[in-house]
Image (cartoon, rainbow, N blue to C red; front, side, top):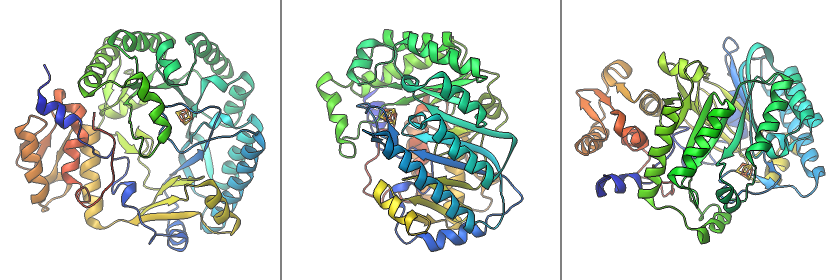
Length: 445
Ligand code: SF4
């Protein structure tokens, strides 16, 4: 039985902590000149990561919270690739070294909204610019509805090592309500293309909290995903933020599950994933025991970045395309979000940085505490930040402990398994910016 206190906590609006400080606290004080210096100071002796944002999709999903555009003509996608190549070329002039790359990730939008030839143009530019080897992981987010065999082969030829498919839910009524119709037979056919091309490993994204979802539909979706052979599942709570994404209002006439129904859907999906052999990773990822994410979690090597949970522990993440966020030892930098502003900055031969934040020592310590809580469900402050005390955070932690969301033994904080879904709330105790911002985040669960 869910208590009212638990339901209230689940409705708290807290960040997802894919960065700290979080994006609403980025400011224009960090611009192209500052970030050019950060580029120049990247050490050349350890691998960096690279993110490429593709802000185009074939059709808008009503639940979408991403920065994307529906291109009516492919020419605008092709022009985007021309501009992206100019952004890469300019970044190359700012870098002092040909850096080794451990991880590449293409996200969006929909990376396979690109033609195979345009995808290869970007991959070729990255290969020229960086030291990319056989050990480099190369992940791509894919929309199965617009995938074909030619693209599958081009992914492999470009060095892609792993793909992630947007699924959300296999129930036809749910799919119709969210404007994303993709029968399981279609996904099976696209997986056959990927396997024939040499990409056997794949992950999927699922959502709970959508209209018409029931415990039966979500269990059936989990079963289909397991039967298809996904080694990894990301199960996110649908974030209803119509003040930021007005098209999400199109879901409202279908009725959205309330917080109690959301939590039941989540719990049911978790139980089904466990029954099908998936281990829970962090708060919202699941992986088979042999998946490298599960292995990393088991060895305490799990990390968190803008893609969520990852094995990638690189300090530097270079990010290209509109809205993309880069991470440096010194801080974060986000590109212009609007396509026209991003393009104008690139054409002006500057890094298209719109805003960012420089990290203080306090930010770095709090970030590490938040990441460890989100990844390991525990943190030992004596080991991680010897001599430091956080009286503001401890006061909040003790309040959360009284509600059963965590325990505190001196400087050791732990989140018990039943409270794992509340890790964002517990981590927020260490967020020194939380009270100062007006940002409206999605609900915690
Ligand atoms: S495919 Fe993904 S990014 Fe594109 S509209 Fe749908 S949810 Fe948004």
